[in-house]
Image (cartoon, rainbow, N blue to C red):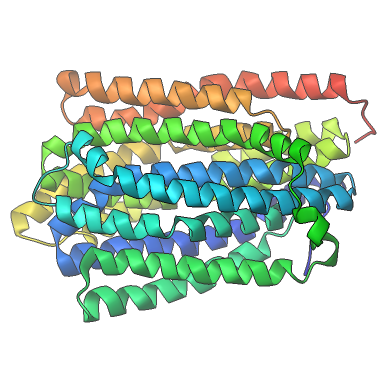
Length: 452
């Protein structure tokens, strides 16, 4: 088992050492997300793909909440590891596990209870509503597995180990694809089969991460570390609540956009969903750079090496923008064909859905550098334990996304739904860039530097 100290060495090499395995892992994760949609869309049809899409933002809301808590829990772990305080690292790990169990149980019951009223609020077409209910019920029943995986993967990343989450995602993606083919294409279980395949695959990735962590002696908690410690729990919750709430705000904004998109018809929802399934591919490297820079800044904050933080974040921004341009070029070359692989139906349905999806994909691809800058500056602040500005950026996203979705369609037609996403990125970046410099200056004044 390899962990990585990121307080020494060239930032570009260290960031890539964590980001590249994460990119590969995210490629596999997105591969099974894309395969899910492709099998559902091509085997079951346009209506089934629309049913999945109509529920996507609601599902993302709860997954985003759980991911937010996991990200927040990992912040002090990276900082204590960078400071070589292994006793405190174990205490944070044990208490984070207790909090995660409580949060997962609470959110599972809440999510399942909200399915019907939320689908009402989202103006979900009656023709696809029963399918959406089935899909969401199965996914929400698996939220404890989602929480468990994200927590354990976050612990591994906080130690600079990007390879173990990569291996976990490879295992999960292969299992998910096999189960998708079995449940949907062979057994004909529809979207319920696709949802079950996703949860079972994530369960395998959880077990893999647990096994990898069990091999690291210095992080293995003792029974005493699992005893609830009020100051430790309070610190974990204080760091994670703004991140979780930020994701919740983004998720609610997405649901409002979905409520605008759903009345536009099943064909529009199918095209919109096809491109949204590619969203994960567009942001693969952004998420990976974000996790890497969060670990990097957290460890270097623990070591009080602020010049290294500045150099690392600047390096990550350059890398992120260049990567986003490469991905955008790939999408302009092959994106239309990829979208077409999601859709089946009559020639008229396919052509209409393809036109909508391609318009959306072109706009997002052109704007991709903004999204990469957003991830890097937000993650840098989270790594330093500053979650207020990222929270405010979530509100900015919410205002821009919902305001655009509600107002622009009356001016420019359905393309207003597409612009809502891009303008949300712009709104967030306007908070995050100055917020990063403010957070870094405050951290440097608060803690005497040890040198670069």
